[in-house]
Picture 1: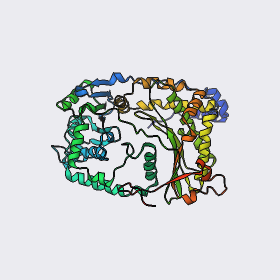
Picture 2: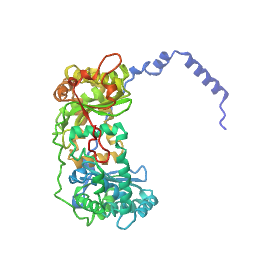
Picture 3: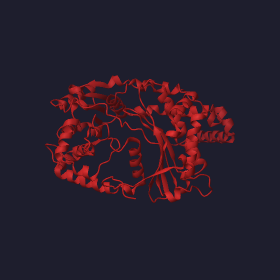
Picture 4: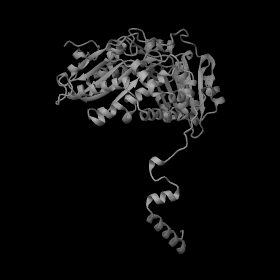
Length: 505
């Protein structure tokens, strides 16, 4: 037991009484603490982006690995990224890339049945996954250090020798078919599908969707062939982080890469773009829902040079317009001032392989869709023709600069960031130059970029909702759909969920 000396206790109580008797400003001044929060000052934040080349290693077969050590915990993370995906599918093979990736994890290996593979992963307390998108496919392993060797064996067995178990494939296809049947239940799904068809075309691999017929055409033999052609070491980049010794883990990787034959070294890269000019105008899909789902946008740009200052000006412009959350103009006007939507966002797509999209999205009650849209279009025009305040510019640039370290917030994030650079061909200098590029953006740069790349005449709008309630506008008569987009609307039919063929009206 700790016994306080009586005199010390009395003295302490007296000092406390005196302290609380002083007004807070006087107490703060006496202690050197500013009286008000805005009077606080901070040392300049200093963060230097790591050097990607420091972590880069070349392995046999053209494989590149990025290794970032971290011995704080006995855990290891490995991500394998392959230059494959939907862009490697044939015209009638939609869904093959995604199904191949899913079945690599779910379908066992040459040595292990699916059940044995699952049991082995559970025994090792390892997380193993595999998935594919339009332009890349990834597989990942998270494992504790004591089980690293066995975890690597299991992981590379999956990558190199997938079984594609026929019974598991039937389960996967059955699940996919049931999900397909529900496509038209969710307005968000309808909006996403139709927007991608409008802006990238229905046949481009980044927008096309699996149908019942393309699903039925997927066989075990096709999975085997797609894997052989597109999951070879010549397409592989590795990101390793955690409790590893760089030299030792590279040796372990070399062992497991040995003898892995190339599948198709002459595969196309980079992936081809849509080659489609999105239409302008107003488009509508009927759905009996209380809120209209709205997307407005046009073609963005593509990275040509990472030293070009214009994309950074567009980043800041978009942040001020609608990308910055509650500090953005769109959120202030549409949500805070008018209460027309719970949230509204914008994004300006700067594409890697083809031009991205400038998009604005929100959901509003059917009768207020027109009013919310009118306000959104006003704000687009204002940022093109008006001025950006110094405070808006400061807040936006600070948000980019202050959040920049999150890109490298963990060893795993660092390794994966540099591995992604390797895959898409982005120089590591992008990261060392990033803050300087953002800092250099001026209000004039923002206005010039907006004026150049935001063209109201090229905007398309897609709304999914009940047209009989959307068209008349709000009860106060502040806006109606006939006042927007020259009063013209194209009504798009809903599609059959299994064939994606437009349904008869």
